[in-house]
Image (cartoon, rainbow, N blue to C red; front, top):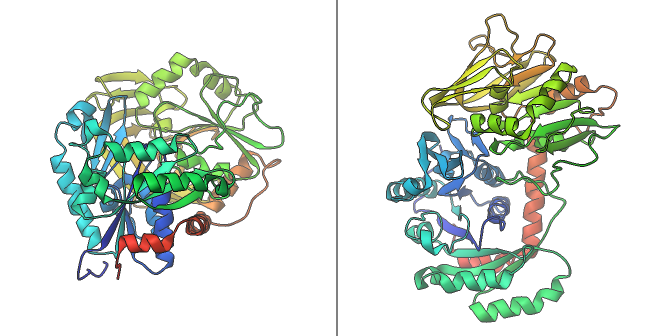
Length: 502
């Protein structure tokens, strides 16, 4: 337990001119910058919307972006850093997670009717963080100038006002229209919000920075605010994505598998969740990882992976409608290897039962029929950390489970993970081990397991990469991120804006 501070920590709010302008990365960078300076810093986002989540050691669920930021801050994970998480399960509905626990599914119209109680809970979480840290860096959501949502939005200016946080506005020059982004945002927010903005960061610049000097001069003259930094686009740093896939992600490549690589395909279903499960595979030099959406032959792939899903029944219907069921079954009949993680495990089974309407109208949906398991969707969510031994190679595995379903397998079936003697085995595999499913997210994070798994998959083509652990790799990336931002931000001006942190 951290020592309580004599006075609440200072706060800094990072708000954006729109979605995906880089707010999450800016917060992560500043968390590592201040941590490197000896400041006890923590991230905070009152409400996040993402299907990319994580389970803490206290078995609470939180958004992956705040996990990244906490890791950058070297701060223990806690759901207070993301007290409200929305996990979209349809175009207008989402599961509502509060303090790490599911409170049911809500339609957008109902959710935004009254957010007062959620604001109060988020504010209380922020105050708990402020009593434990020297600085809390808040992240906004989407555009901070959505005038139609302002009275119900508790993530952006409302939270900044509540903790008296100066606001830094982040704009993305890469998408174009950066002058309109900044000036337009400041023009349409109320005067009280406008007065709280103390500076601007222009993110994702490409090219010769000297050519934008007149642009900076214009923005500073037009807004009366300092441009605290022109941050270049970077290619040399790998940080887990919040919700969108990295730019280098290969989707539906026309050329297909590569002859001298270990070729792995992941089905990019509409409600994909926790796609960061596969990031460690993409970093292996010997591996070619493709995400597929359009049906095609799977010949040449060493492994097909079905990912997690926030709406398994809908994604199974999508597979059928798109024509994927036949190629998957043909691949299985040809002795292809297929793995399913979480929702993907459920899809491989015989049937999905949803008697309570957890994922839509009550009913049932046929699975792909590749494993003899039956899943029943439950209203109570399973959130747990899991560790054990992968039966096929004897390597230790660990990760986390997030699922609404309970999957029953035949008594004499073969599990994929042997857990400690006090726990039942987990997952299931076919008799010859070519088809398997598990609820374990983070399966490929452990270096030794990943290398043994890939060696077994394609011993003639896999060449083990560096033995660097995932934690060491991430730590190195956060330091690179901090170095990149410190180089291009006016840290003295930013420190003056924040005030005394001690």
